[in-house]
Amino acid sequence: MKFLFIIVCAATLAGCGAEVMTGAATGAAIKKQEVEAAHQTREMAQKKIDQAAQAIQQRAEQQSEAAK
Image (cartoon, rainbow, N blue to C red; front, side, top):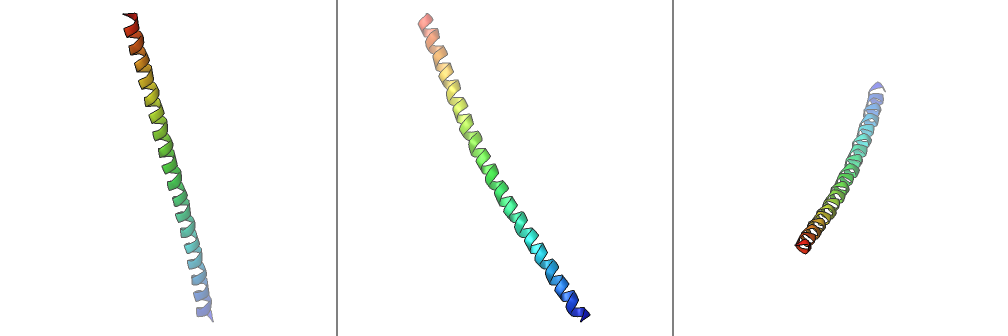
């Protein structure tokens, strides 16, 4: 009887461990998606910044040529 109790307790604890591992894996997958989304947002923002800087440079060149 004592042996059966130990087996039941071990099985219960193993189940809890599996649940914790599943939760951790799910949390890691969500974090990965968040990081990828943040990376894409950063890339899009950098492209917009580059485009704005290029437009400012072109305007400055045009104004410089017009002033000649």
